[in-house]
Length: 123
Image (cartoon, rainbow, N blue to C red; front, side, top):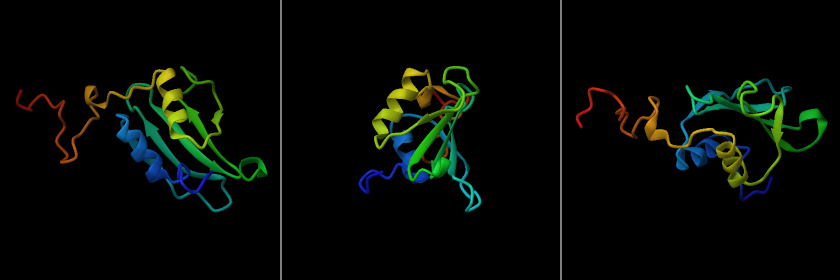
């Protein structure tokens, strides 16, 4: 991965997805040092519920891979994406039906923490 594109960093990866309208939840980021997984996030919870896990040096190859897993609904099981481009990741997710219109889901919250889909919100 290039120094300019920090896809291996979970926070950067999640921010780029959020900037493109995806709901992203952090799942885990403290794997054991001998584990090739670096972090796992959940994208589009409640709909496609797609897990993305970043791997470093999987199969003893010095590279970064992203495993995408929606339980085999739209994405093939054990699918790995090797890319330096966030645009490639976003395009693949959209093509596979992962929603990026976050405001239309019950998990959407504005930055101040107010759920815009809460039925008590004034219209």
